[in-house]
Amino acid sequence: MDEHAALLAALRLQLDWGADEALEAAPLGLAA
Image 1 (cartoon, rainbow, N blue to C red):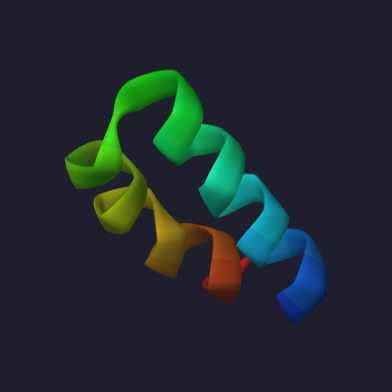
Image 2 (image 1 turned 45 degrees about the horizontal axis):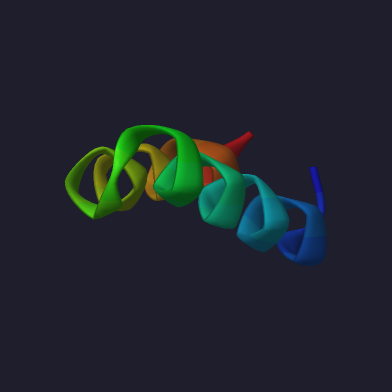
C-alpha cells in the first residue's frame, strides 16, 4: 500500500469508526 492509499484508508476509518480508532489503525495501514 502506498502512502496516498494509506491516508485515504485512514480517512475512511475515521469516518466509519471515529478518530481514536482511525489514529490507531493508521500506522498499520502505513506499514502494510
